[in-house]
Length: 72
Image 1: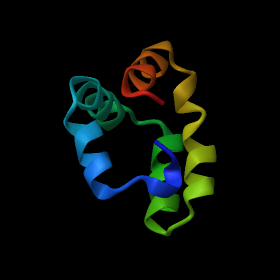
Image 2: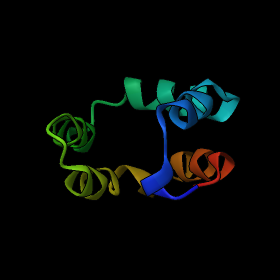
Image 3: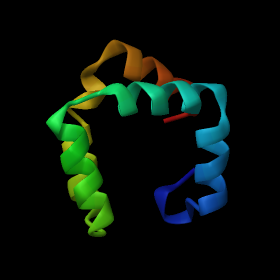
């Protein structure tokens, strides 16, 4: 799935998957400033900055595992 072709339908399908649900819970329970920065950047439409900010979170083995289950 290329990011250019990523639709809201694709996002909902990922979020509703078991791995997506686990990832959402893990991120919601995180108090990491990188998550807040990524969310702020995404809300402003700065998707590249959001990706850069969230890379730090992706260093977690648990998050990497969930992302790989999502096909990322």
